Structure formats: structure tokens, C-alpha cells
Length: 562
Image (cartoon, rainbow, N blue to C red; front, side, top):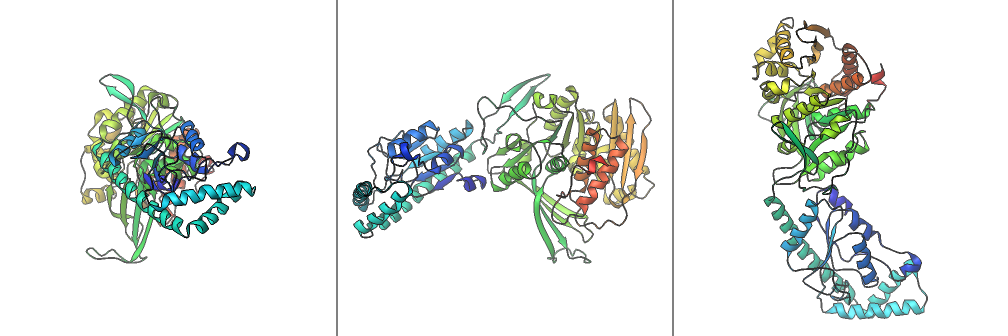
């Protein structure tokens, strides 16, 4: 069940369900099946509770644990081989669509438990097998066989008594279960597609100048409730994309040939600018929280698990929204690099990121920093940035791509909230004039003594927060240009930081994100802006040298103490 849930599979079929063993009041022998049903939101189809168990006590325990239990087209709860156990079913359902409706309603309510649907076994041999089971149980009691020895004894005796009918009946009930489960799985899928995608978070809804907390209905794979639990807080909040990165690079020393396949190396890793920055901050010991969105699939569940378990990101299961719907699969990013490790071209499939939520006022009030990428819609970015500024939080922005940089460059409301920006050369040109620039313009900007970049930086600084603003422009092999303005009307100051010599570039996809995350951590630790740039560049080198991942797993808190 747990693996099915992590893979985004909502319907699980098995033969029979474990439960409370007979005599459990002395042995405390209760199957782990019941605990898993209580904590994993998967619909399980079985032939009921195995009749060698205490069926009535099993149903009582499931009720206590809050697990919905139903019999499919029957009023008597099934007992594996027999369609009747003698215990009344807690609830009867008569169609796959009825089961799907109930299961999805539980998901919208955020109930953490699964659901059990018991299907009667109508194979003619079933009653004979059940009779043999009852005889074998009496024999076991007379022979004083107890505990874990009961089951193998009973199964052996039943096989002898029924001359193989038990196996044939078992095969029939599994086939019957699978048929019903397939119908329910189709019904769940069809019903889910008819629902609008929704988020499983308590977020801020804004109406003009007034904003009020609003809890959205959920279609998600992690627990929630109509009274949202307290969300985690941190000094640093990140809002942005979580993506699976697919990176292809030609063989060393070869050039890409358009229009044909190129021999080389392909790798897969977790990515997304927001997620990358959060990982950097986590590995550097900042304990960030991440607001993002993934699809209700195995890729999304894997990202969430690794954020918490490996990357030091706090409470990802509560703050990364899982969104269902046909077009809301977990985002993927396909990057084709040249032989030098620089980006040649890329394609992003990221519709789910339109559902990235805005952190609540309560979460922002506990933070010092909000870091955002440009993957969310511009109205989401503007609302989050304005909410942060109103709460006294500095906003750091990573433009993500040229089209997104151009989009944000046309929003004066958004730009006015920014204290820090981390564009590359193409992105700052797009942000400064609101449009994408030609490759010739970009190339010229790198070879005119930085005049074009400084002009663009002056225009952007003019629109950023009046109190203070800084732009950290990454220029690849030419290093970093820092543009700073201290106070309204103050003269901007430019500083150039050359790159480290002799760096062998294996993968540049996460270098800028690493610089951003390490810079943020350095500022949180009290470093001046120029010192933070140097710390960020040192950290970026580690990711540049990491062949198979956007962010180097060797990052540690020692870097930000340099």
C-alpha cells in the first residue's frame, strides 16, 4: 500500500485482508494490515477478512481507526472463501462509481486513512472450503496450537480436506477482486478528471486591499483537515518550481549535430529553481520551507520525500501541494548541454506550477527572507512579494528563464517589492526592457566593457525597492557583476567578481541556483553583500563540478562560514 501510494496508485487489490486473530485478547496478535489501512490513503479491494481471524473484532478495530469499510453488493461482510461471515457489513456499496465517489470525498476532506471494499467470493467451492476451515480451527484448538502456528496448520489441513478446491477457489476470488478493482480504478480516474484541480494548503486569498485566510478543498496525497494544522515556519521561505531534470550532454570533445541523434550521456535528477535553492539552503543548514506544487504521481511523491529526508527542507509534505488532474503531472525539464557543459536548448513541461500557493501571513511573519523563482503566475508572484514586504520580509528573486524574466519585467508592482535579483545576462536584458533580446544583443552585452549590462542594471535598480536594492548578474565564464543601490536616489555601485581559475564544468544547470541559495544563507549569517557573493560563487563551483545532479550533495554549512 505504501509503495502504491508513493507511486500515485489509488486502487490496490489483494486476496484477503489480515485482521485481529482469534484469542488476540491474550496474544495481542493483530495484523499490520489494519495499521496501514489507517494511515495510507489507498482504496483496497479484497475478498474480506480471512475467516481464520476474528471478523467481528477486526471490523470493530477498523471502525476505531477511522477506516471506511464497505461490502460490494452485499449486506453480510465477506470472509474470504465464503461470501458470508455472519457479521453485518458497516456499509454497502453497489457500484464502482459509488466507491469512487466515497473515496474521492475522503481525499477532499483530507482524511489520512485508506478505504476497504470487500467483494463476496461466489465460487461454488467457497462454502465447502469455509466448512473445512472451521473444522481445522477446532482441530487446532484441541491440539493446543496457538499464535503464529495456527495459520500454517489450518492451511495445511484445509488443503488436505478439500483436495485442492481451496486453491481453485482462491484463484477465482482473486480474479473477481481484480475485475471489481479495475472498475473502481477507472471510476476514480474519470471522476477525478471531472473535478477542478485544487490545492491542499491553507493559503491567503486576496480581494482588493483586503485579504482573508481561505482553506481550499483538496485532491491530494498528504493529510489535511477542515481545520488546517499549523504549518512549519522558518527564517527563510522559498516559493517556486519543483521539477524533474533530464540532462543530456554529448561526448566530450564533440559538437552537437542538429537533426540527428548524438552519442553522449543522459541523467535524471530533482530540479526546479525554487526546489534547487531550497536544497542548497537545506544543505547549508538554513532549514528552509518550500512552497511548490507537484503532480499526484510517483515523481512528485519522490521529490517531496527527498526534500525532507535528504535535503534538509522542513515540512515539505505540508507545504508542497499535490495537484490532481489530467494536465497536472509533475513538472519535467529537458536540457541539452553542449560539450562544454553550457545549456544549448531546453524544454519545460510545467503546467502544474500554475498551482503554486502563496504562503500565509503567519508563515511570512516568522520569516526574514522570501526567495522566489518565476515559475508561478505573475499575480501569484506579485501577491506573495507584496505580502512579504508588508510583513517586513526581504524578497530575493531568481528570474528562471528569459520569457519569465520578460514577463516579470513588465510588472512594476512586482519589481517594486524586490530587494535582491539574480538574473543571468539574457535575463537582466529581458527584465530591464520587458522583452527578450536577440543572441547578438546578448553576446554584445558580454563584450562591451559591461556597458550594456550596467545600463540594464540601472534601469532595473530604479524600479526595485527604494530603500535598498542589489542585482547579482551571473555571466558564466566572465564571473559575476554586482550592482547595488543603498537608499532612494543613491548612486549605484558596481563590483565585478572574476571566476575561479581552472574549474572543469561538468553541469551548469544548478550553478546559478547554488549561488543564490548560498548568498541568501550568507546574508542570514550576517555577511555583507560582497562577501555573500564570494561565498555564493564558491558554492556554485561545487555544483558546476557535479556531473549527475543540479545541486552538489557535498555542500555543507562550512561554505557559508568562509
